[in-house]
Image (cartoon, rainbow, N blue to C red; front, side):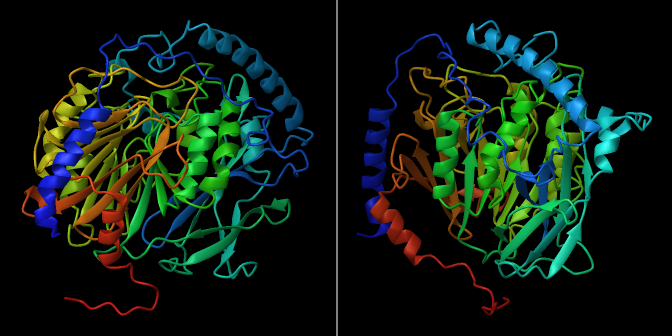
Length: 553
């Protein structure tokens, strides 16, 4: 049966399936009881007892521009004669603080899903963070006895790498930094960018083997990563993994394992990362939990409300800004709170919900400039990710960023954005192509993927009746994969944690209609069976392999 002949049947079956799956009962939203973090002593969260104090941990990859990859890691020299007593003193204070805060969380005295300001005001307007402050703030005078000053000079930041295991033909050095709170010293946070020096860029679609650390004090075990294909309209297929609101529970670990088993080429995390909520050692335990994944696949992260962390004598977003490397300079945002990057045939924009975003803001001006520079012949797909959703039929967190949507929705529509991913709501929801609250053939597909598994539990209640723009919704833990098949077709698949990894719980083909504004519209978005999906996938062009000829047209 031809695709056009089958379309009415597919649409009817999809509609009946959606009606059967999306029936809900109207109740007032109430977050389920908190689910606990894994204990710090858990084998996936604790530091290896036999590890040298200078051996890197929490290794993390970030795409750093064409032919470049950033590698970040932490060293925590607990046995250093000068640092050891400082670490012990701060850690004791941190444990005392966490005990108090854990009691509040468990007894539901504190709702950390929204309480991200020092005074407990959950108004989103007050959450907006003016990053100008960080640009212009005066540097503290350095003191010789300052632990971060000491740490930064204690070790070097070096990556050895090559295209064959154990044969490291290239060496690149970077720098390290540190941050402090009243009850914490971070250890040395190292950032090294490969492929930007005189030795030239990394080769596309190539596996590199690497080890990082200080050659005199200790190097990491060998890891590997594969670089993306050359950016361009033939760089397909490419698999983007999507997760959000992860945390560090048993559910979090299962989501991460399932995501990696889905074999993404790189990952987008839509925010609310560690759920440390001011207790800084939980950033380290989370870094260890995700390291087996982030040392293999590049992750792009964006801030959520749980990254604000204004308590305990530290400025907001301090851990978020310091622990990760961002392509801010490369995308000319010069901000870790919003930025963009290109990968394969996609232009990915990460927007900040907790910094200024009105029409008179720096973020808004940057967004206009960034979208104006997109070449749809080079990157046919334009994807946006942010933390708080614009479209959400769950009872949780409704209308929190309506003013952001009012400022920016028209901009995304006019530039033909293909898909918008968000989190914040601890459930899964996929929308149809939507614009101004209504289904629209040229609007983006809106998908909420805040179901990563954090300790706050699932958001289980929805509006009834289901809005017309909403296609599928379910309060279950899981992850998604957005596979760009070619310049016009992409397959979205959502995997529920409770299922075996190969099971696809929800899927939809996104077919671009290049007659829409900005070369970014859609044809019909429709549900296909797995058999149909595999058939379509097999007929699409494969990604060019290294050495294949490229014909210019």
